[in-house]
Amino acid sequence: MPRAGTRPTSRDVARAAGVSQAAVSLVLGDKWRGRVAEATAERVREAARTLGYRPNLAARNLRLGRTRTVLLVVPALTTEFFAGVYTGAARVASRHGFGVVLYPSPEGIGPARDPFASAQAALDGVIASSMAAEALTAIRGDQLPLVMLDSDPSGSVGAATVNLDIAGGVRQVTEHLLALGHRRFLHLAADVASWTFEVRARELAARLREVPGASLRTARAPLSIKGAEVSAEAALSGLPAPDRPTAVVCDDDHLAAGTYKAARRLGLRVPEDLSVTGLDDLALASAIDPELTTVRLDAELFGERGMEALLAVLEGRAPAAGDIPVELVVRGSTGPA
Image 1 (cartoon, rainbow, N blue to C red):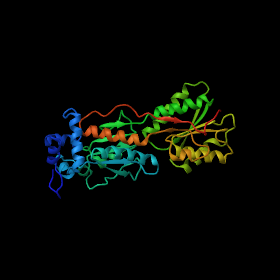
Image 2: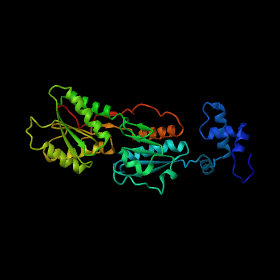
Image 3: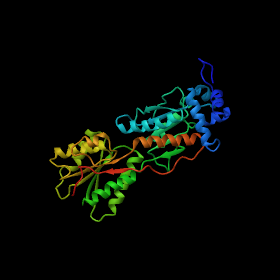
Image 4: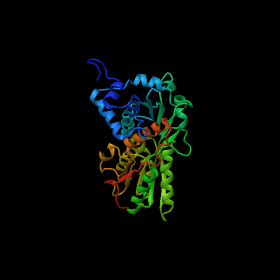
């Protein structure tokens, strides 16, 4: 046991658990699997808890050449989605002794400035959500490990890519509307040059090409409620009823809220005259009336998987494969054509 008034050391933990200091280092560094028995690992953790032992992270990081700090770069903090991504990433990071610094790029998907005097000296890696690859050059150079979220896996500059099944979500929306009898569609597309929005457009068009009598118009809108209202009103007005779309597929929930406002200005009822869908399932989706049919994206799980992928890269392991499933949530904004 340590002397009264002194801080317990790894040697004290080793003595209390009846193991070597090397075993204590492996267990508390979370590198024990395959090298230390599970029962022994639990004995070490219990001894550390009983003694109140805390590893000297500063000394360990200096020894390993690590800062145990990760940068999460997001386009903006204007929706709760990216807050969820951060929450998930930070949860996993804390379990492994890492911290996460959140950095919204001032230019959205454009070039991002290095928030540090030298990111390569201050960070162990970067997780970038929904960012253009060139936006990260100033931050990471060609040295820092990078995990891309919501990005084209075939053209990724990162060591790993983690994606939600956005294509599957669009297919679920489309099948739901087709089953309700809709054949005239308007795609209210985000006016942002991003792979994730290209996937939405591609999947919607591909599915509707397979349906006899289906038609698809596309209108682009800024990612804001007001911008969506203006674009949707322009796309829906001046059309005779037989030609007007009966369903509007929106790239996110904010665009759907703008479409609601445009519909009301035009005297159209949701969903009796116009079915509307979103994508994200933000708090907004259940705050508008009628509540919005949308695709639920698990932002926290997204952040968790991103951090797990970066930890795998840092440890020389292969990250988990496969897109994260999404779920269609049917509410009152969709009805029969």
